[in-house]
Image (cartoon, rainbow, N blue to C red; front, side, top):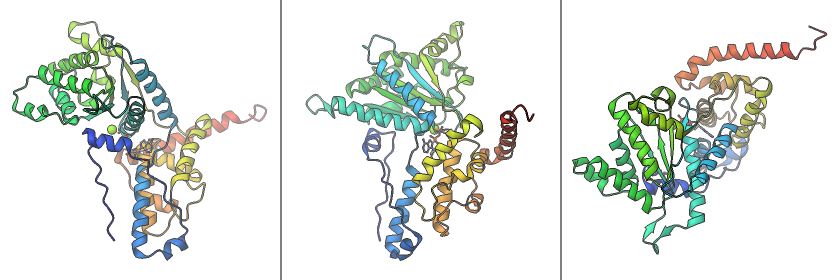
Length: 373
Ligand SMILES: Nc1ncnc2c1ncn2[C@@H]1O[C@H](COP(=O)(O)OP(=O)(O)O)[C@@H](O)[C@H]1O
Ligand SMILES: [Mg+2]
């Protein structure tokens, strides 16, 4: 039995991005009973498990945080349709790791790509020039102005991306070439993932802040950044000193958006957490899964994940593979207890459990009728 291995193309090249943006969402595999699974031939079982694994690892849920973020992003993009001479806003999504920044910007970029193609078609100039509505680049290590321009050129497969290695091209030329690619292909959204590597207190950092300001003016596109702890990089702080003028201007023009973790599931916040677990309950393809399987373990799941969506999904996807392999076909407490997730969540677990207990006690006290108290 040979299954095609999905070799997902790199999202940092336009071909990979286009495949991602235009691929239909994965279909939920049929939920078979334990008996039906046992009756599958060996080959059919391999196929079935493969599709379940892939589905569990990829389905997305619309959390209230993501819905709110999307609303703000559409507002920004639609308001930025003005002519090139006007200063455009940019947004930065600023949250700790594992809160779904990359997932959210990619999903938004995908929706934006589809809408732009629907509105303006697949190509321009009688089919000579491709329409590439979104450019997406990601950083690792130190962000420099040169690295930013190179990544943008790389995304478009621009021949100068390679030439730039030999330093024939000065940075200003690179920037101009990158801007030209953005213009020519009708790109309106540039996603820059993980900009927190900015060292804003250094000369290079100040240069980059100036560069970003220049790009935002020069490019007919809106920048969408993600980063961790952006306020402490200094990029978003107001300042009157000369050296920091660029940063102040950035603080005025960039909208800071966040993706907060889920609050302790107590009182008014309980419903949000339960809705999230309900959404996941309905997506899991496990033979013994009961409709309220996760909701019944709401407090336990909060303690384990500490309200972070990344940790929650890690626990659930790892739990699901485990339950498929050992035949439990259900996310029982015993299965979930077997799973180790990220260190941060494991370390915070005890403290979060205590907080949750305290909040529940406080809520119970508040809700007691006065006459009893
Ligand atoms: N809306 C969502 N629906 C489903 N899973 C999500 C969602 N948001 C985040 N995740 C899960 O959490 C993990 C971490 O999210 P990611 O976007 O990489 O976070 P960040 O970029 O903030 O570090 C993802 O790999 C994914 O499994
Ligand atoms: Mg990320």
